[in-house]
Amino acid sequence: MIKYLFVLILLYLTQAKRIKQSYVIKSLKDWHYISKFGAETGEVFYSLTFRIINAEENDERTIPIQYELYLDEEWQNAIEKSECDRNSVARRKETIWVSVQNGFEFKGSLTAKVRAHLWYFAFSDCEKQLRNSFPVENKVKLEVELHITNVGGTEFTLEQFGILQIIGVIALIDVIMLIYNGNQILEKQRKYEEFSLPLFLLVITLLLETFSYCFLTIHLWIYSENGAGSLLLQVLSVIFQVASQFSLTMILVMLSWGWQINFSKFDNFELFLPISILIGFFQITIVGVSFIDYDSYYKDHSYEGWVGWLAALIYIGELIYFTNGLVDTYNKQNTKIQQFILLLGLYGGVYFISFPVLQTVNLFTARYVRYKVMEIGTMLFRTSAILLLTRLFTSKKSIFAQISIENKSFLDRNKDE
Image (cartoon, rainbow, N blue to C red; front, side):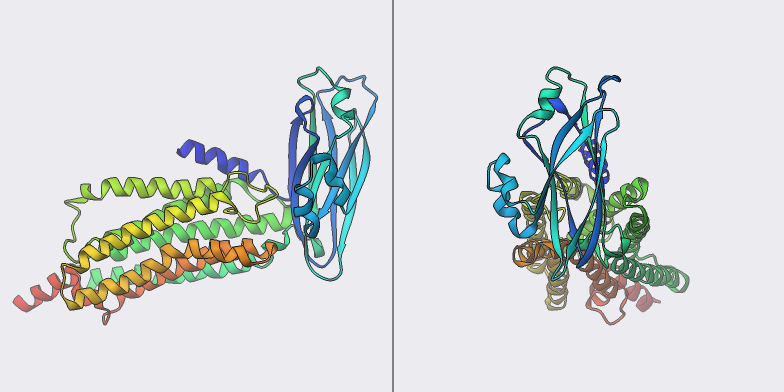
């Protein structure tokens, strides 16, 4: 599964707004989607390059390929048509004569005057002139390269506008919480010689998330400059994101089943081992499925379509298990602890249900804002859950401070002294 995830990550990371795709000419279909781009109002520039790879060196032919450009308003109508009828609704179509030896680079621009739009790039070989030019060669390939720059020369597509600054702010909030919680652990150790395991695990979660956002921020900054970003930084960001989500989910699940209320040590951690493995598998699955068919024409964000609803079902399953733990613990405790269980249910419930809610909200939003709704929304809900748990673990007036085994043992010891 981890190997499968890594392969999907690499496939995902090869997709930027410097798109490069390769096709075996003999296996081409009549019509191929290349990529899409969210263009701001104003003028957007692009270059589209076709190259014939592995052809004979003395081949001096030029071969026609039709490139097509579709506007979001007609896109749904286009894909409902047969492949060779789609160009009837294309906003722009042009036959490019590609030199077998040197290829051909086509440069163009798009202008939006009223509102922002999504533009879809494709090419077709409905007359089969390209395929008939190489009827038997298995090694001859068509390489397609697309580079787009948005208004103002930025490499960001419309959906990504502002996201670099937002992620930077969220990363800063995480750093502040990380410093605060780390100081709380050190202060408690210095004053009382007590080690807070819940707070320590929360710090680990924060550290993982901070690394993820910092790597992502640097990657996006590089992306804004070259349209490709950094492969290493984005791989690291995804790995730390998975680890952070796993850690946060495990903290919530263990608390719901009575950790720090009925027990504090991990002598019986084997009881949580199966569910921890299952949760780890689910977290990897959630991230892994987001890379399936990335940049497909029907996906406006990583979790568009069936992969998003599969991830939503996983979150709902985790919510059900979390709720079962809350109910079991609630029925065994007094009123004060029951108040804490209700509060924990609110904090954790919002975290688990946030993804399905955002997925549903995106059904009713414009296509070019869905990416921001999902990406920023999940970040904000995850950071909010950590912020609420921070308050829960560090506030001396919180219910948790009154009912946790860790604090009870300290109060009882002082009473005996």
